[in-house]
Length: 191
Image (cartoon, rainbow, N blue to C red; front, side, top):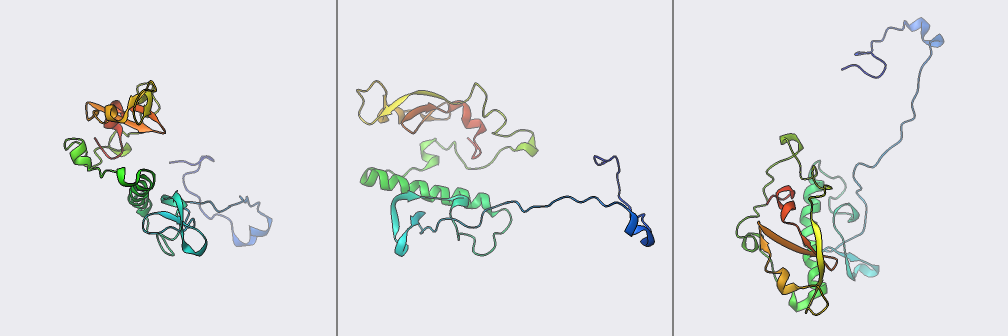
């Protein structure tokens, strides 16, 4: 298509003898960050390493904030894989740190009755994206605060654990119970 100046193609039409007297337009080009290759050093559990290469208790990271995962040069397209894999590893590690022996392994297929395959069913190029309705009024809404044992006016974790199907799905984020049933169809990992 045509550019902002209305030209479709730029041809070198200046004779060599006229180069000295012709105006030239210059733009300042500055570098930008496409992907950050540096970051915090982590171990195989995504624990951030401090002095002496010892893990800092309770501090985990993944994605661009973690450095060294890709070596000296990241292969194009690997950043999403990096975020998903190390995001899951750091999430499990953080749960183990917080819950200790009370942490329970979760199998998405078992928890959802086979509903979460991990397959991506749609994208912007396929006519829709999970982002399309993400900020709409019909998204996930806070139901109440979650408590470990009840009695505080919120839902217990036992009550939340009963809502694990595609037609009735609750999660707890930062102590708040969220009904994410309507969001499941838009979730990037699929239903």
